[in-house]
Image (tube, rainbow, N blue to C red; front, top):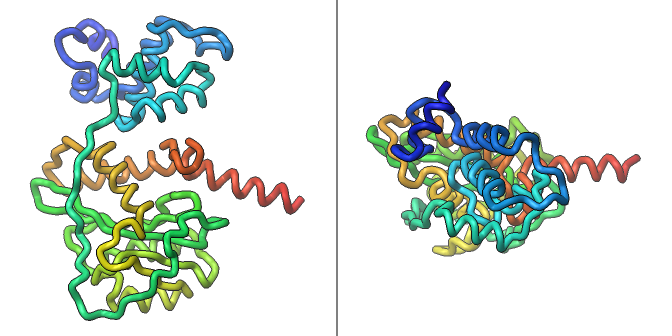
Length: 298
């Protein structure tokens, strides 16, 4: 059995490396070890030994593929019924070298040197709309592969921070952002009047993209010149993707990079604990909103 092989050779090779070579989930391995050692999940209120807690910590860390630091690990444990102090989690992680991926700066991809019309900043850093489908934000980033650059555009619903549309192409032409917008519109069908915020990149200022916004009844909003903070939520998304998941990875093909990004986007929307949302996932945050609307209407 693969888990038994990993256990026998864990002192010789890193567990995560063995899991990758054997094509098994690292989080699955740690969950197997937890059940093997400690049986059923720990009952609420019962003190957890350091040994047991470390297994839970490593399982949560592996499930996030190394993205979570101690604050999100602590919140994940609490959500799973493991009651433990945050300082204890921080101490154990530091003691055993369990940490989030390192920080790294990335180059801005905005091409704002053009003579196309610029939309006003309607958003004005109001990053907390009252409901879904009121404000969407968008941006472009890049991913290096051995075949060349892969460009990614996303559309983010600012209320739930959920990625509602995306597009990946080997170029930064207007179709990159238009395809992401069309995907978002077909999935959500928002009412007219939605604010669509972006930077001043030529793709967003282009006639074709602006015409698509008009067709969908959306209002164009753009950041001030050279001010990335006007689109901070989307910039934060890139940090989570690149630092939390892609940092240190090498992709031989664009297809490999696309598969990894799609996997992360699914994880981000459905499972990743978002600090701005009170440490629940974007999907759960939005579901809570809809449940509240139904309750109020009853």
